[in-house]
Image (cartoon, rainbow, N blue to C red; front, side):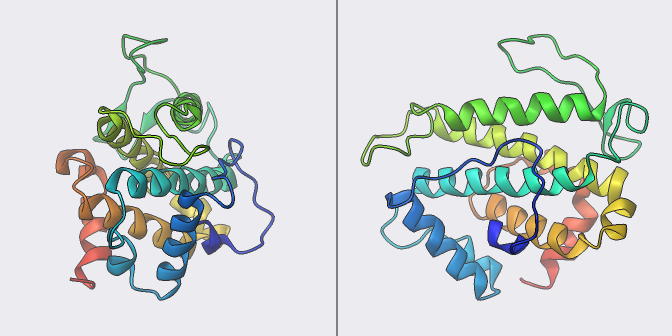
Length: 217
């Protein structure tokens, strides 16, 4: 959760997405933070009794966007057109950007450009009240909500993968590795709990995932 970062001056890559205070989703977020505080991440990601799965996925997706936003914000000085001319996660995995609307044919671009496209696209989805209803209580989620959420999470994973493969030295220099590991572990437990990302998409960090999750089985 965002509380992992304490009160440090947090430079975010994009503006933070806030869930309206006093709303049911805000209460869910507080519940998640309290459960996370107990340190049991497997328990923390479970759907709270009586809650709607779509709403739980929505609240957590917003929170992962905010976490990744902060994590990437700490290393933007190291992720440049020169250092990262392609968006990759190690030598075997390269990502080309397409969003299906503005850019239909996948384009090869630098990592900072790709991540800018990606985070802007995610932000647009989160700001769409018909997709992520947060202001009015009781508004039903669209039928395609879960498939959009899965695409968002699949793409956010790529930012983690890029940071781990290309910028982990910088993360260690900044003494951010504990935050990165806890955030990623929370993310992986969440997507595993609800089967939100295909295993093949997780391949760039498979070894790390096994290492982080084995201890908690």
